[in-house]
Amino acid sequence: MRTGIGWNRLPTALFGASGSTCWRRLTEWHEAGVWQRLLAELRAAGLLDLSAALVDSTHLRALKGGPTPDRARSTAANPVPSTT
Image (cartoon, rainbow, N blue to C red; front, side):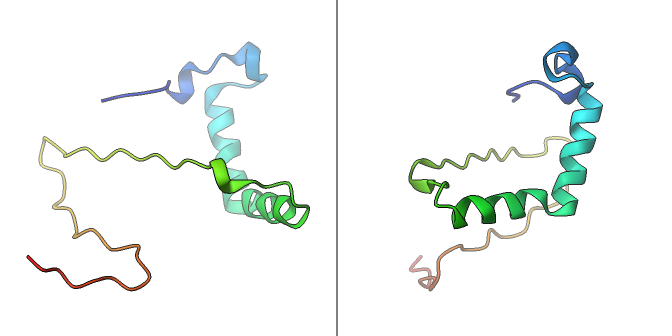
């Protein structure tokens, strides 16, 4: 399963940098807390509307012997005991 494009396939002319440079900068900005500060500033200015936010995730089983997955943790504030 694959969606999007790999970093090495980003069009350099469009972004002004190679895919590996874009990836490195994104990683550096994350580690430096740039995204957290940006979100805090947008919230403080009332410019962040999360009513239309979407989070997407895909989980695929490792067919060639990946590690045994841990039990999924609940994200609920007060998880209900299983009835099964």
